[in-house]
Every structure is written in C-alpha cells, then in structure tokens.
Image 1 (cartoon, one colour):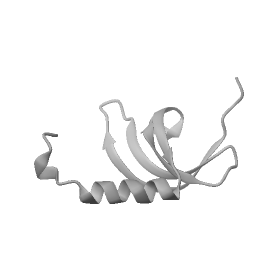
Image 2 (image 1 turned 45 degrees about the horizontal axis):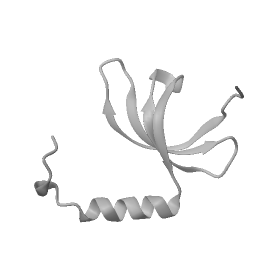
Image 3 (image 1 turned 45 degrees about the vertical axis):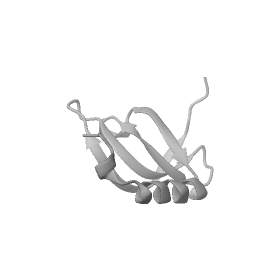
Image 4 (image 1 turned 90 degrees about the vertical axis):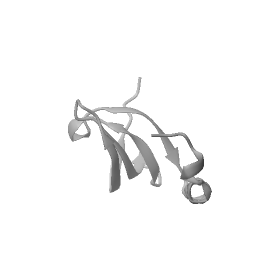
Length: 79
C-alpha cells in the first residue's frame, strides 16, 4: 500500500480528548499535496496515528455550518 502524505496547514480546534490522549480535531489539511480541505478526525499523540474521519470541501463546509446553525439543540436528546 502506498504511503499517504498529509500536511496540517492550519489547526482549527480540538473537539474532545479521549482517555488515551487521542484528540478529535478540526484541521485545514492537505492530502498528497492536493489543495487543502477541512478535515475532522481523531489523532493520536504527536499526530503519529489517525483514525477514520471526514474531509469537506468549501461548499460542503458551508452547507454543514448552515445545517448546524439551523438545529435547535433543545429539540435533540443528545448529551
């Protein structure tokens, strides 16, 4: 399997941290020298390992932001 190259262009924030030091992060990230996208995934300490995640282009990020802005959290049964 070919190596996957990535570069975190700009860290945008940490959503949570697990007991073993893994963090769920939002980053502006470039995969294999391609234009950067928004990336949400779990990262191990020092970004040595990563979990599965989701990568969004600008239009998808705009759509997600609008959807999140329109959600009434009081209607959800989420902790």
